[in-house]
Image (cartoon, rainbow, N blue to C red):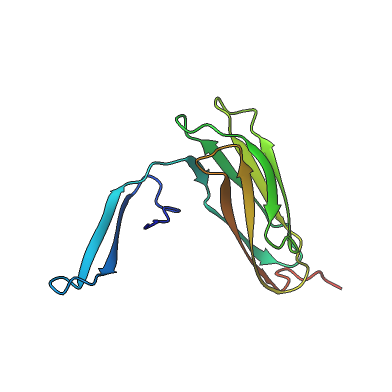
Length: 148
């Protein structure tokens, strides 16, 4: 069995190859090609969260998740891989015509440095039960020091 990971290919063509070794002396190596168009499950914008800024600034970003009409789903739970440097919440967007969700991610890190996390959105869909949103953080020194 050959499995192809299509994450990140939604709406784009996919072209993957695999080398197969056989015991056939005439053809010991053959190449299989898998190609096709990957359908979009949901529109996610932005696709990753970047929380870049100074220690003293409020760093927050909102991601909009809109299920495709042919693949409706509900977000039933959320979980962060680490969760130490971020706060996050998911809410339904009531201002949208179709059901959509807003994932708000906020920085909690109060020291300089970088961090990385992933937020998992669990869905009620058997097609894609988990959506992953990557979070990148880069916290720098205070930009505007307060006068004495």
